[in-house]
Amino acid sequence: MWIPLLVIVVLVLFYRWHLQSQILENLSDKYVFITGCDSGFGNVLAKQLDKRGIKVLASCLTKKGAENLKKEASSRLQTVILDLADGESVSSAAKWIANIVGDHGLWGLVNNAGFGFAFGPNAWQTRADVAKVLNINLVGLYDMTVQLLPLIIKAKGRIVNTSSCGGRLSSAGGGYSPSKFGVEALSDSLRRELRYFGVKVSIIEPGTFKTGLGATEPHLKNLERLWSNVNADIKTYYGERYYQQYAQGLVSITGSASTKLYHVTDCMEHALTAVHPWTRYSPGWDCKLFYLPLSYLPTALSDYLLCRPAPKPAKALM
Image (cartoon, rainbow, N blue to C red; front, side, top):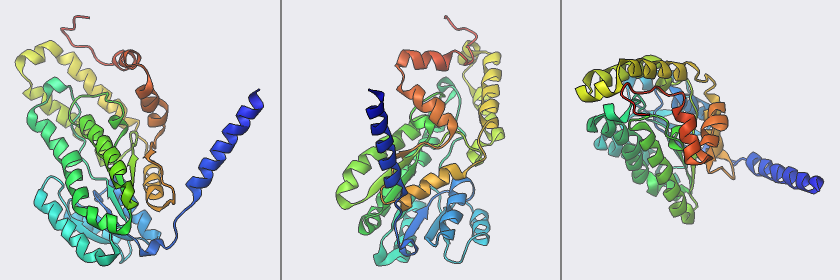
């Protein structure tokens, strides 16, 4: 009884591996634009693809980031300064890309840039706090993608959107998870809409990695700012101990972040170069073994597992 089932499982896994292992040819003819290349995943991916002979167009937020990247890459790699929160900057970058790629079109768009120093209880956040994250992580990403769609459709190319394990399971307040849930929804609608043009859309859902966004100190400074500005009544409800425990939780999460950034950039590369890219990639053991399984559990059970170790407000009624 079990042998036929085992054979079926093995055949399915082999077929999956076979599809996954097929890589496109003539990669040196393709242009790929990557956002957020000052550091982290974008920086590693830009150099990784450059070594593969792909024509990399990399955006950086700062001139220093662009200069440092060019020092570590070949002359093929070109850079542009881009601020996703600024519509004019996005439009300028899109025109720059169009002038470079011409009739070739744009094979790959990797929406990697993002802002993540936004974790804290929802009751401590303001409209401006949430808007800042959404404007970069979702609205800016949307704007960049739509402006480049004619070039991507022309090349029958790929869109690779960086979401997060926090885009599948929201375990902290603030605008970060809502922005990543939005990236998931946008990616799903784009995938279904653009399939008729031969364009494929993939989503990267990393766990916790040691990038610039994974640095501990900026998260603690942001939490301290939120706590110092919070309404007096809310501060009484939550209490100083809650703040201290929340901060300790951020230290614990960022302190355990993986340094193996290539786990993420290898997924991005596969999404760009595979004949049959996956719809979703979930790099990181914390994502595979905790966040994803938890996201499929009944809500009552996932709520219990997430709330049990979390800090408790001073005026909690339960």
